[in-house]
Image 1: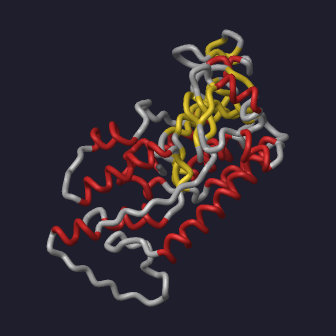
Image 2 (image 1 turned 45 degrees about the vertical axis):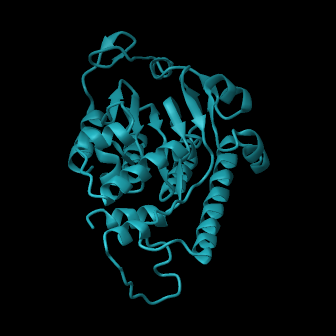
Length: 310
């Protein structure tokens, strides 16, 4: 089946993503496995945010890096289910390093609108951002959703800002299994798997999930949840118990409540955050203190990288 590889990957990986988004992905894969063909526009309408993904850009002395869509380690891993609007942790890491190395850039903003995604590569990026503290200011803006894996990443910044209508949190990890055995039976198909290694094919969608396989998936989910909690505790300088008990318990939290709980630092818009660094964020070329500024080396380099090396 065309989508069998994607379904197998879906069933074998833990996710740090809001529940409704994972259900949308599951429904999409079920439709695809049944032979229903969806256009790229239909896929985007079902499982990607409505906001168009931007390329990274520099506004005066501020580099703005978009973190929009479903998070994965490499963009190609989720193309079948996230379309062109997913975001790769490897791309964010490259752009962050370029911004930090560019002498013209005085601050870095992560413009985040993401329901989360897979856990692969997330802690690596979160730790990289956290370890970059103490140099140029790094600010993450929930504009308007910073959930699960995206919150894992965003909390690593020096400051976390939430737009007035935004939400942050959803600290938790999921794993799901799509049992296609009944559908295979209805199609008159009887699959046979030849494998070596007791658990090699334990999450294959052609068969129901065994008790051993379910226990193994639960173990993985628990492992990554503990990693998630520990990272947020490190990033927000609070105890792991506080993260578990007070940071939403798996739910997203609105802006003012997030600040009150210590999950975020302030309520504000992306525009306001950019302007705090003395840069106008109005239409047209970026301006500093009212003076017109052309697109600089940072902007050209990031645009080139976005197009040539997605």
